[in-house]
Every structure is written in C-alpha cells, then in structure tokens.
View 1: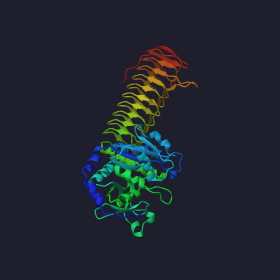
View 2 (view 1 turned 60 degrees about the horizontal axis):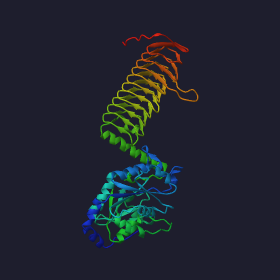
View 3 (view 1 turned 180 degrees about the horizontal axis):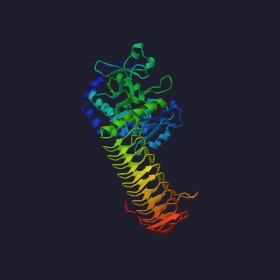
View 4 (view 1 turned 60 degrees about the vertical axis):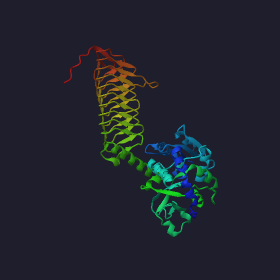
Amino acid sequence: MLVGAGDGSSRQSRSSHSHYHGWLLSHTALAFVLAAGLGTRMRSKTCKVLHQAAGRPLLSHVLDLCAAVGAHPVVVLSRESEPARAVVPADATVALQEPPRGTGDAVRVALAATDSRDGVAFVVYGDTPVLRAETLERMRELLLERGAVLVLLTAQVGTDNSYGRIVRDEAGDVRRIVEVRSASPEERLLPESNLGAYAMDLAWLRTAAPRLRENETGEIFLTDLAAIAIADGERVAAHRADDPTEGMGVNTRVDLAAADAVLRRRVRERHMLAGVTFLDPDSTSVDAGVRIAADAVIARGCVLEGETSIGADSVVGPYSIVRDSRVGERCRVEASVIEGSTLEDDVRIGPFSHLRTGAYLERGVEMGNFGEVKNARLRAKTKMHHFSYVGDADVGERVNIGAGTITLNYDGARKHRTEIGDDAFIGSDTLLRAPVKVGKGAATGAGSVVTKDVADGMLAVGMPARSIRKYLRKPPD
C-alpha cells in the first residue's frame, strides 16, 4: 500500500486548535483489544489468547497493560475465542466480531460497542503480552506533541519479516506504510517496521473507520487508516521502540515460548531491582503474580508459581517448587514442593518434603526429609523430621512426630481427622487410625497402632495400642 502525504494544511489547523491539547487530558482513554483471531497455527483446542506466558493467559497480560495506562478495555472476540471472556474483568466491554473480517473490521465492531466520542483510543492485540505500559504512555504523549491523529509503534527488526515497512518524511512523521507484498526491492530493505500497536484520536477514528474498504481477500485492514489520515492531510507519527520484542505477537508455540522467556526475565529483573537475590536467575522460573520481599534469596532451579508470596530474609531452594502458597519471613525451604499451603515465620522444611493443599505450618515448625503434610495444621515449634505423613490433622504446639508416623485418615469411603495435643510425643512408626485423639503431653511407643483416644499425659503402646501408664517426658538436653 503506497499513499501520498497530502499538503499538510489540515495538520496546521488541527494543531492550532486550543481544544486539541485538552481532549487528551480530560477524557478517559479507551483500549480496543483485538482478540478475535482463530490462532490456527497454535494447533490447539484452546483459543490462542488463553495460552499462558509467565503463569497468566496472554489476554490477561494485555488487560493488565490497559489498566496500567488507565484505559477502559473494549475486547473484541469471535465465536471461536469467546471462551476468553472468562478472563475479561466484569467492568470491561466485550464485543463480538462475527464473522472475523480483519483488524479494521474489528475496530469498527469495537467503536460500535462504546459511546465515547473523544479522547485517546489505543489499539492493541490480545496476543502481544510483551508490550509495556511505558510504551503506550509515550505514544499517547506523542499524539499531543506532534498534533497527530495516529501514532504507530515501530522498531528496527531487520528485513527478514513480513511487517509493513515505514517510510518517514523530512519532519520525521510517517509518509507511508509499505506492505511487504507490494514493496520494491529497495523498500524491503528499509530497517523500520510497523509492530501493530496504535494510539489514535478517537474523534478522528470515528470519521475514518467507516472509510476502510475490503481488500481483494475480503478483509479490512487497520493499517489502511494511515493512508486515510495522510490523504486527509493529517499527521501520522511513529514511536520507535528501543526493544523490538515489545511488538512480539504469539502465533505459534515457538512464539509462545519466546514471549514467556521475555516476561519471566522481566519478572526476575523487577524483583532483583527491588532487593531480591537470585543465585542463578536463568535457572529460575517465576510467574508474574508472585510476590517476593526484599532480602529473600531464591536459589538455583526454583519454580515459583501462581499467587505465591515469599517473606523477607527467607531462602527458597535449591530446586524447590512453590505454587499458590505463602512463605513467611526467615523461612528455609530446600528441594521441596509446596502447593496451596502456608508457612508462618521461621519455618524450616526439606530437603525432599511435600506440602499439599491445606497444609499450614505455624511459626518455628521443622519438617525434615521425605515428610508429607496435607490439609493439616502443625502448630508452633512442632518437629516432624523424617519419613512421615500427616493428613487431615490438627497437631498441637511443641509436638515431636517420630520417623515413619502415618495418620490413617481414609477408611475407603470418607476422610477422618486426627488430633494431637500440645507437647505430645509420637514414637517412630506410629500409625494413627482416624478419627482418633492423642491428648496433651501424651505419648505413643515405637510401632504403636493407635485406634482409640489416648488421654492427656498417658503413654500408649502396642498393636492395637493401650494406655499403660503416665508418660514422664524427659527434659530436653
């Protein structure tokens, strides 16, 4: 597509209007998020914008971008991508493009879904999770500075690509966009290309969008707006990104992996700049939603996923997985898996421990190698050092759980709970058949099978265990 620049008279009259500076500042911005693409090259039954990068759907990253620049999102979906509605905030606007007929038609659909007449309209794609809020802000500023109706995002991305090439005029504005298929050999070698994000004067866009026309394939292309603006004598500016990856779109699984790598690197860098130590950043995977306090240390090979938080002065790793869990301050987690669990401050676990959903370890709990806890609370300063399983249980303070202890919580039909009182001592290889209660200060002998409650302060031994006498606990060394 080759178009002329016009005589510029309309540019001068527009930029001289006093209201032009005002509309940019006085109106809430819109963001038209184009997410109706079929994503056939993903080879997936999941719509493209729901594929995840850095632990979040592609579309969620773009919607976060809209929120960061204060732009109300109008999300354009198709019948195939409508499942993505599940991640769209309730206060956003959703519009259906049926059938999908190109990006220009998608913008028409978005315009029809909102009554806003003035301000800034960003246009972004739902599969561009790497785009930064600072970049959109700069594009908005450029609209004002240049008195433009349209600002393109561009970058120097080499010549081996299908992006439209940018030709600038002597003032640095866009003179034309040259599509690769119609470019001359010289134009194909132009280093600057259109990345596909836009900031526009919304009032102008409402007059220009109806003039978009179908091409020979029946599609309506958004890039034709530049030709309309230039032919009208309006100014089209371009913001050239320093980082060309910002325009990275996801069309294949290869693209998805590349976007994921960029986002995760940014996440790690953000945490490091905020005071977190990564001992081997490239070996560590951190989701975008993870929160890490200053002075925490993340060792090599860690995977931190979902809504996880790590407290100050804690050390996680090496080779630990923490998913949707809270780790308090001054904790140490080594080569262990933590899922849907909570660690209060000063907890030690690992190596090779597993906390499953619903595990709650209070302050000062110690959990050693090959221990597993599920849907159970271990209260302050309890110790569980070796080869034990505690599930569906409430364990008191300062309890010692000997090696090989198992709570038998499932009878084949229902789960039952085990209760262990404060200061109890559970001998090695004890089996606790729930529902059962071991009282405060009570104890079980090694190898006991406990099928009945043990009263406070009593010692139970045997198979099945019987209470034989008061338990005289030896003072610690």
